Image (spheres, rainbow, N blue to C red):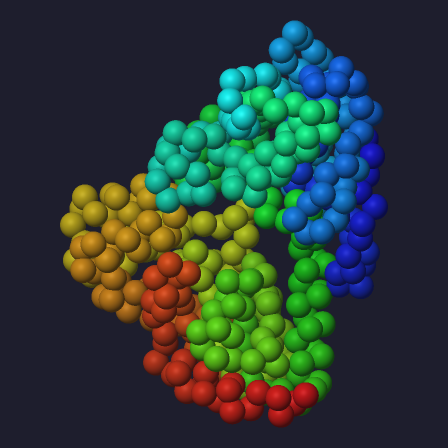
Length: 384
């Protein structure tokens, strides 16, 4: 299997990138379409990913009938500890009526059973970006060989049913297999030690620049909200990824005076439940935490049960809004979140929190959060 020779420097180490299941599905589709339309078995295909990186993927097996062809490629996750590393992704491409490309999921690809996910109920759990990549791959092959008819693409992952048992897919409402994911087409390695080392280094550099106020964001959502909605600058923002506890410990050790945590409810509900590592392999409890605070706010048993069954935190917020319980629920949840972050800081630095949803906006803020937002705005750029 050809390896993706693309590396990133993380925590003083070079880690090799990989490619997503979506890239694999697109590669298998292009190879199968070439075999079907030109009767050519290609040893490898090139996939242009949304990240702007062209990936060369080896074709592991191929088969053909009168109106169909199948090809398989094997996932390369690079140095990322991904449970799908090495799995076989198969595309079956068939001739069909009409000019369109129809995309379906076969064996080992999950099916959506609850609303609120990327795809609608009943659809194969192949997310929007991979679907676009699969469609582009099929259309490129058709254009190259002058074919103007329809193509039906079915993606299968033979090990998907077993792998799904090791994920949160069943709780999210994805049954029967894994999801075909990826927004960039490229897997950036997430070695835990390397990530934590990188976060610590970024905090040290910021503190050494003279900063005493810190804004922690778990990821891109928090980063964007802090800048676009809170009006903060880049100067004091540090992404802690999933490793909030380690980041708080380091910030306190270095001597930061204040720490403002800005994050999406999907991450911070876990922290309100006591988790300081928010990675899905380590913790969840979002539904349990939100349901408990909803019950404290007076939610009926049937609404608590609905929250427990909801596939996403946005769907949970929808239920709270519908019942007029959002404000009360978020008040106690935010208070517990603030207490947990403060406890981890152990009095060594002042901590405040802001929690939001991309769909619903600001959901809650601790009592002194507004003051730290203003303080961050006022001191932005002074240490640069």
